[in-house]
Length: 115
Image 1 (cartoon, helix red, strand yellow):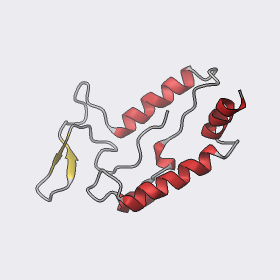
Image 2 (cartoon, one colour; image 1 turned 90 degrees about the vertical axis):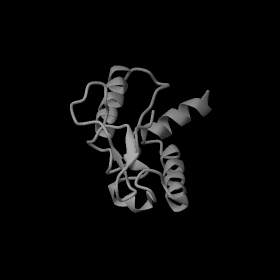
Image 3 (cartoon, helix red, strand yellow; image 1 turned 30 degrees about the vertical axis):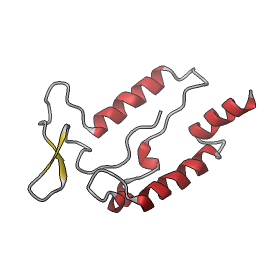
Image 4 (tube, helix red, strand yellow; image 1 turned 90 degrees about the horizontal axis):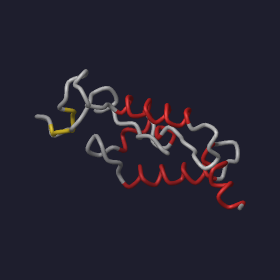
């Protein structure tokens, strides 16, 4: 499981999203709205599931900000979606993590190919 990449417009502001007066994406729900999730809240929920299923060798997870983090948000051409260079960066980082036996993704992919 991979949680969301960085996206400043939605880190703490729940969706759904809309274009604001400047043409940038923003959330429409107010913090505290029932059922509305921010990216931070979804990452917390995914981390809880991974922790609860920690004994499952076929389930691995990572924080999506390892692929595109706060220092990379200039690649979000519309404030939400990565530009081509951002996707390339994410792909290179993903491949490096899958090949790293010390990273949860590397262990998970290693377990799939070992059997």
